[in-house]
Amino acid sequence: MPLRHRFRRMNRVPIAFLAVLVATCAASAATLTNTDSESHTVVVTEGGVKNELAIAAGETVTFCNGGCFLTLPNGDRAALAGPENVEIVKGEAVIK
Image (cartoon, rainbow, N blue to C red; front, side, top):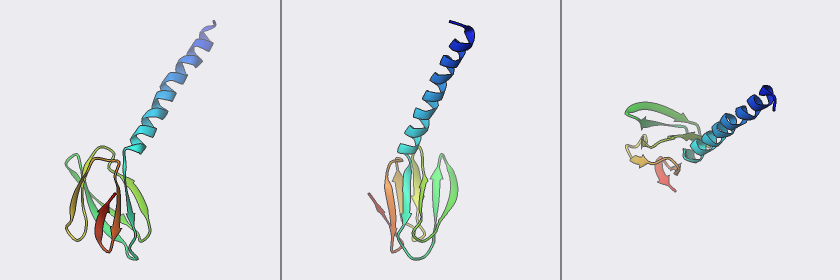
């Protein structure tokens, strides 16, 4: 087999691995849906780093790939492992 054909075949393995890795990360991420009619800002603490996450009314965002803490505007806190679905309902978190 010519070298160029072997090289093409070898490139498929890393690309396939990367595709599986990306799909796995996305599957383990948490989602946050704001069902309220007003926007909210939550604080996500992941790996000791705090970030504010603004979420508009009716919007859904994906976050928290490897576990995090979520702090809502009303002070509620939740520890998330990653695959949870969280809804903001009347300013409060509902974890599903």
